[in-house]
Length: 488
Image 1 (cartoon, rainbow, N blue to C red):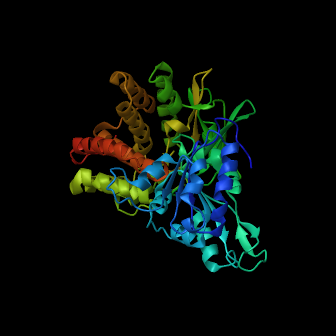
Image 2: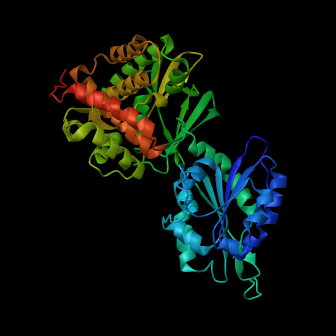
Image 3: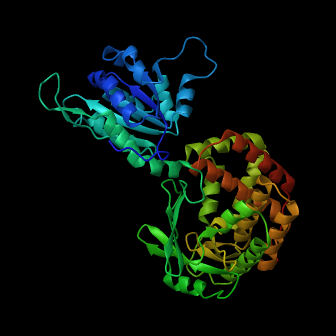
């Protein structure tokens, strides 16, 4: 069994034992685990069927706590399944019967352990113990396929074992040691996936690696991404790359690199990360002015065969129409709709429809986020990654995207509001115009989209959701729903 370096692995394990004969080996397996991981905190949950093969008393010497998989009858203030789901960094089900596997795969949650495994963000390792014919059974193969699609589930392939029923090597078993080894192999990936970060969500995955003369930003859609990147157009790439040589912010079109889109730039940090770390300052103000100019230059290029609407607008429209593909985003939408009320909710939908129907389209970046602006700290210049979301859209779509991010950051972070306003002013100065009377509604749409994306691709946080709902309530009602013209 592999043992990670101190401080690099998990420290809290919830072990669930189900009703297989292999459960009789648990006391010895736990002893070996304790010897290899002396700092590991282990709680054991046994099902009633597991108690036919191993007693809680036999497990107690090697566990911090041994519990039975039943609902408490004492009216405990804290629900058992919530405690287990939040406490555990890793849940291992060993040995796992076909019956327990089936209930888990079907989404059933009739016991605290099942409900904890269904709802936890922890890594869940499943180590089957199957009778003869179990691996070949249609049920097992179906459940394996369903569970393998879950991002926090690790399936431990069983090995042939001697069946006590037949005396032949036709049963299938996995061990606790194999389950821990499988967890170790996935642990680093899981912690990267689970940590909220600019470079790792269900929507987008990104890595920055050294390249010739600078860095290569490699990006690809995440497993939950709404749609694919726009295809690469080499002719358009060449035109965009030559627009702003020598400017504070130039354009960096991407090239296809397998499943990734690769961008060769001078800087390794994004403007978003610099702004969150250092706050508003002269360097970021200069970059915002350059970003505004860069967007103006993009909008001056003929759209050609590029079409709309933006991918982002499609995501927002589906969400506001109640057709979200994400269960967590749908839940967030229900909360937001209740907070805003039907009138304001319809107002948001109407604003989306107005943009979608606006005939005055330009070649649009589509999603010019601060996280896509690579910054060369030595020179104080930036390169805007472009190409993934290229589309035909009204001019204000791109400008509102950045303005919405800056307003949101000003709301979320402390500091002098005038410093944040200077960034907005620099953006508009660089572009040559501001959003006018439409600013509130356009910013509200961008922040609503960000709430969708957080909920769909990062996770659902009730307190964060309540804060965003209040802020959007303010923005939507501040606009008042009056018609505004977007003409020059």
